[in-house]
Image 1: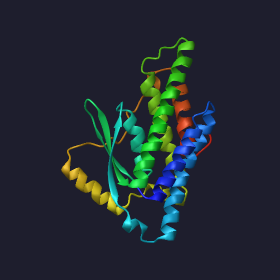
Image 2: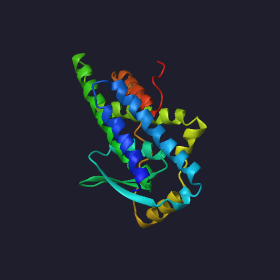
Image 3: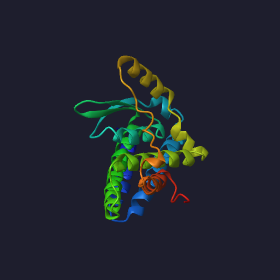
Image 4: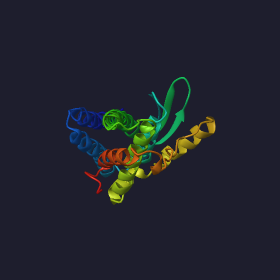
Length: 226
């Protein structure tokens, strides 16, 4: 990794470390700024060196995850961070992330952060549902679905800004490497998190809204109207 790449990743890590306080809103703002930093980094690189893209090397990064559902968070990030991704399931689940070094590193850092926040939000939601004497059966999938849908929707709305749309365009070199990788490996990439019928559980509305709001803020908005 070049010095510039290291610096941008360090800035992102610092932002996310600062968000580990008890103030949830700080975590939201940090995630928003992390993607903004990546966008600015790419724009600055292109301005300084028009051939920067041609000189980039595509990396294939392996990243371990504990649970399969985590892959869907990384999938949303990859789609919005110029990368492609594959999931390998087995005794140990792992992801293969393909992209330029700065992008793949950012996806790993940001993905780990989002997974932790989703877990924390789910723990809090379980406590709230239990206090109201509702069943928590199926709550995990409901909350995760809402959280992931929220992140996805937030990025999609943020991308209506032309500059942010640049982060959704996978570079041709990355596409080419992805094609080679796909031909060599028999693997499937996760594309969509399981849909849940809103009438399946009473807790769906509150859990979805909370997960959606948090994910929405991560993607670049402060609050969704209710």
